[in-house]
Length: 168
Length: 168
Image (cartoon, rainbow over all chains, first blue to last red; front, side, top):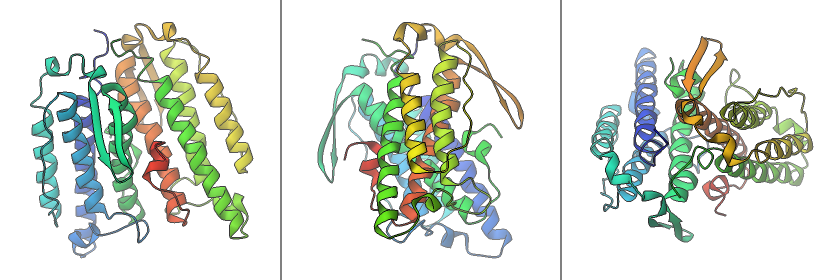
């Protein structure tokens, strides 16, 4: 079977979110072992003017859900960014997985040439489906999954690249 | 044109390396402005037992060059990890770009089903071309590009996500 836009998006997004979910669970367990409030860890940042861990997870899920919706030609859904606990973030990831895995491969046929516009602080970014996936969604999704990993790793959580890759 | 394995690899790797190259240049300029030795920045780490910036860049280039070679069915080339300066890292990135952009799309036809084995500390990882690209090369390439960005960002370099994405 030749590569399809579906192959390059939904299962890749899902795998990344599941790996993120497991890395987060290790972070939560680590905070509990140390007798710290796990939710304080969610507010950690690499530097004061970068987004905290909780936002890294929220944005990662948004990249996956909006990415799949736009490629399928559907409206993006809006989710409130109101999580303050690990339990709530796990639920957000589960909802994102249910959303993206609800799409059928047929909905992604010809999506490589679909016109997609993303609003950004620097103005509209115009893509076709292929450039949207490979120049925006995937680099952003991995950026936020990696930054979440780096925040936990820097905090001392015993995770390794195999956890991030899901080969552990 | 439907999506091809070439589309999903060589231009994506190249874009990521070029963005990394520009982010590195901003890091070097920042160190010079502060009167610091830029090469000391290359030894910075998020935590003592993570790899330093120089290694993040070396591994990112290896992911791209080995990824393209393996998908094209060629032997991977071995490069010494001996860079100690920004200038040497820019040269390594330029060599990696020349290597991957030397492949023709025709060399990637049917690569989605090519059997590929990667040696890891945990033993052999067995892939087909598709899973190798989407479960190993791309997540690793983005991991190391993002970690390099995070190291520079945490050090105070004035870079933003637009630099990482190459939309600045």
